[in-house]
Image (cartoon, rainbow, N blue to C red; front, side):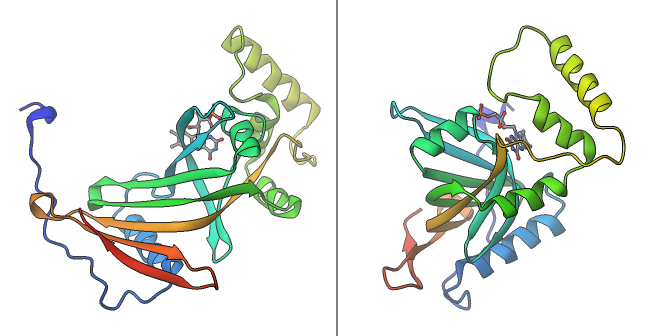
Length: 213
Ligand SMILES: Cc1cc2nc3c(=O)[nH]c(=O)nc-3n(C[C@H](O)[C@H](O)[C@H](O)COP(=O)(O)O)c2cc1C
């Protein structure tokens, strides 16, 4: 049967208000761990949606590199399509698509460049060739051929021999997303899913609401 005609049942794992506390970061940490334990491919992959200066939305996948009560971090090229959109308009949506667990998490918030020392630490942790790739690529810009890119890489491999210090290019760094809402979605039978949404309260802390499926 074509996937278009299937009606897959999403199971009976409930996700309820009982016992989840009021800290969405703790719930997120639990769900990320569950995705790792279930061996979801790239469990830290998420879809980032941005809106540019002309109010045009766009989406792409990136990898989560860190999170704590201050926010969610991903790294990218600040001059890429997403980088330019976010520098002009910090409104952002993050979506973690954990389909094999019948789960998704949707975060709405604002993205700002992280402090330079935070970006430096993420850059330092990259393997040498990934560092060089982030220097070589003017991400999102057209280029005439793959060969030109490979030539840039060969030049960089020569300029920065094994063991040499590779400086983080200014164009590359982390965005930190400060969440306003964090929704946890658990698939249930007959499309009667569980949706619990945390909203940041004005005076600190979070409110919790159940949304209809
Ligand atoms: C699994 C996966 C992980 C990715 N991780 C990143 C990432 O962490 N940072 C990044 O800039 N692009 C990452 N990409 C590439 C982006 O999806 C995208 O092609 C690139 O960032 C350019 O997007 P833009 O032109 O909308 O700015 C990843 C793609 C996939 C499929």
